[in-house]
Image (cartoon, rainbow, N blue to C red; front, side, top):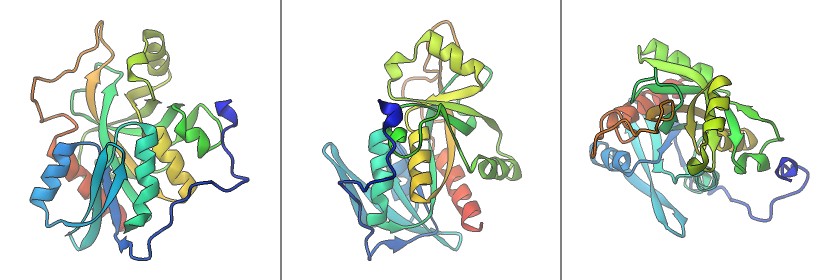
Amino acid sequence: MITDSFDDKSSAKINVTKSENAVKVDAVIFTFSHVIEEYVAENYECEKVGELHMAHGKSNVYCFEHGGHKFGFFRTWVGAPACVGTVEEIPTVLDTKKLIYFGGAGCLNKEIARGKVMVPTEAYRDEGTSYHYAPAADYIKIKNAGVVASFMEENKIPFVLGKTWTTDAFYRETLNNFEKHKADGCVSVEMEGSAVQAVCDFRGLDVYIFYTGGDLLDAPEWTMRKEEGQIKHTQHDSGHFDIALALAEYVAKI
């Protein structure tokens, strides 16, 4: 059974080897949006230092300097297994202990505006990947939620604090499950959070997470809550990278 999948008593058959040439950086920022990747490449003096590969393509890994710090950036892939794969492989290119992870998430509360920043405190583990990195449990604690919340408060960035629901199956976000998770305090639903936290805990990494409030489940019918071609107030909004970069500077000083 999946609840028996965590095994810390034997070695893995496939292992990632940290590169001796990995570039030392103060933190690595990663997200899913190709629009954000284009924005970063065009607006910062980025150096491409490597690539991450999967069957469907490659993701460039960049370094750039900002505010007296050196940061890494890459675009990850959607879904817990693929996203966790990039976290596992980043030591082949970059050397860091601090990760800034952000992206879009569905909203479980109609009172939370489109584009609102949501900071998860715990993630419901409705996916399979995390069970190979942490003992079975309904939720995993997002350890640095307090740090992210303090950053938002100090920088006067409006945000919502609450649990998130991580699921593998966005076409099976059923009415009953929506009602259950909303009642349990979840404000967002996404596909990677619990697994990213689990792999970071397992590998001794600090991850700092926030989401952009997107489509709405808390309505008679699901709605995207955006116009065709809209960028602002979506996960493609470069303003959210600006928040991630400021957060990277903040945690680099910790």
